[in-house]
Image (cartoon, rainbow, N blue to C red; front, side, top):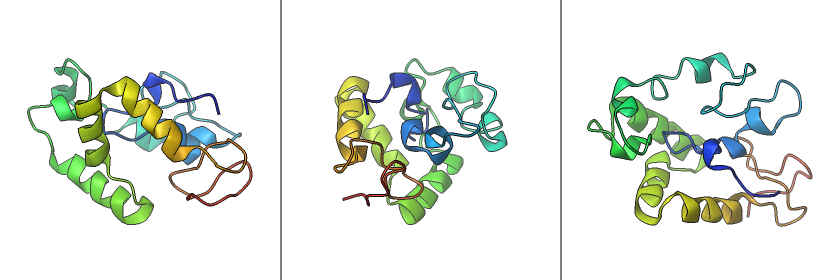
Length: 135
């Protein structure tokens, strides 16, 4: 794993580089901030990504929005905390506090597979390359 690109950090705090749709080999998604054609329909139609309030922010992250945290973000955060043990609001707070560069380094350390150096999938909890569990 060479590290995450800034473009892989979604406005809501999801790291698209850990998403199953990004990590799979077939019909690979390029991340929500890209214009790729293989994005899942729910990503293309995402109410957060297409939010008019988000478009007005200078950072292009939800933490900068006047409605932060909005109902949709809170719902998504609850789902990710419950199902995937990841807080999107927590991620946004880190980005806001330490900056995107340091946050990406933190993400690299958090999601790097200790066995093979691949990426742990947030949706599966294990490395897509070698099946090692997230530690």
